[in-house]
Length: 134
Image (cartoon, rainbow, N blue to C red):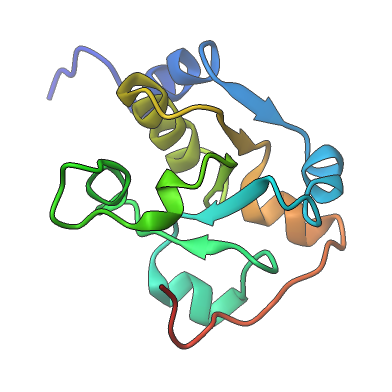
């Protein structure tokens, strides 16, 4: 199969156009009430590994629908005016998702360099997935 663009190229192109926050800088934002972390991993990943404390779970497959106020699936958290900091496991899905939300006009939006893997490896706090969220 000959693809016009592979995943690595798509991620590199997204990273060239979005804000990437180093893990240490992201950790400093965790208590900032004007920042909302968004975990876009699959629910099984959250159950298995935990998540950034206070993060909102928005599965990658529903993210654009939850952000769009004209969508029947819209979630109010995305109309809060906060800065959204996305993460996934290794910062590939989050790079693509951040680019998509930026293209939609959501501001400000960024993602965590290295993803949840880098977060864990740097000894940052981890919380269990809440059983229910808004």
